[in-house]
Image (cartoon, rainbow, N blue to C red; front, side, top):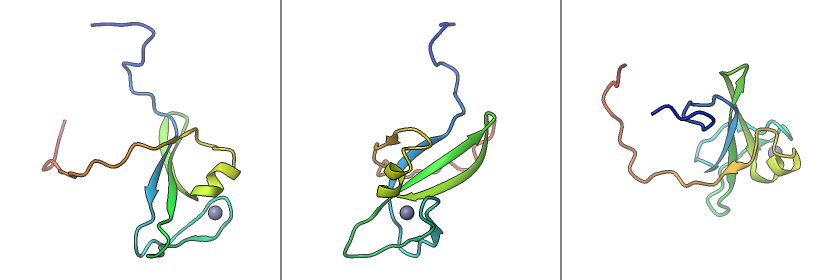
Length: 95
Ligand SMILES: [Zn+2]
């Protein structure tokens, strides 16, 4: 089914997702340079961006939730879709 014009093709571009800060997290916010720290009492969120340069994956950037907004969403709007509960990993999926 060749549908022209629609995004049937995977577009490799930067995207941002909202995630909980994990315990033991040791990443730094790209915007403010501060550590994105896990605190049990404050359930911080972080924005994780998969950054694509020239159509291929380049790096991951982390932001504080607030900082991403302050940085004017450099990698697009944040995808708020929650992580699926069941993390089933298929054993060595090959093409
Ligand atoms: Zn920050």
